[in-house]
Length: 456
Image (cartoon, rainbow, N blue to C red; front, side):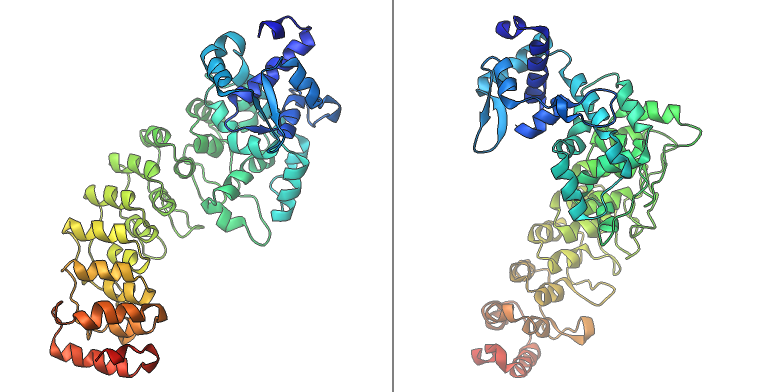
């Protein structure tokens, strides 16, 4: 570092800027990403390619501290101990590193080329990523870098209150990479803007100070429950971003409406979003707060608990059930049936262990957990249900479309060995009546392709 300090001012600035990016980046930067990052000039509207520095020059001015991995194309510090050194001495050598990065991002994402908004389709997005090597990293990570700066820079606030098209572009890689709910709405065949604002973007990244500043400066046209075109509020975006502290903070505002539904997206509430995404961090603040109704139904009549059960998100299922603010067992709401049908065995085990569920309850379509597990071919889940001792194993009980569990199983070619092993040869052990055994025999005879009737 003393050697760097002894260089000409221009070389010293280049070295410190390069080290700022390399040291503070949230992942290793490819060489072209770093070159473009260093070429950004604050306040400009496009990248001047004449500003792109040769790699040899970057390596040279850094005085042996950085190297290029030829195999991966990444430029990095020479050794992990160098990273540790800069983490200890950043305030001494690179005090403005994060400011430099955020200001560069805000300039970059404000470029005229991104004022066209989101890409039209996947091919268009690929072209954009190829033409602008820093774009992917910038859109995914700018908010995380911005969170380290307090108070927020004016560049950041100006961007969040600026062109909506540029704001849309700054979020498109995020929503595509993480398959956020609006990606499903806008992905195919032609994408369209979702109408998000800087307020939504600040909420996604959990930028409290920036959120307050944008809200205060735009009070006359924006409120804390501002909806985008999909009717998602900042609270929805905070959930999608998984920012628990920000969610709790938003819920502390009296005017924040926790149960607003998006009619454009299956009438989901923010709690539905968290449950569907498996975002346990995002759902806990709602459980800790008494502000949200945890048991609201979406347009399909499903609650967040059912969504979590279907997805196999056992930690969310546990949190919701233990909150005592959800309906665990009713004919219309059968999370156990959802979990059984999807083979979510850990969820099934948990629900059976609560003592709160009726393991024989049919949902509104007439499906019991066992019937659904057998039809879906989830043998391990069916075994778990039968071994629990809580399931009425009478194979003559009719379910959906008048099908018994055995008939359901026989419709699934993948369960034939399971039928022989677990059901037919264990009928007496699991308490199935003679009448049911006769029925099972008759059903098997009707399905000679299965071969299971030969058991008798």
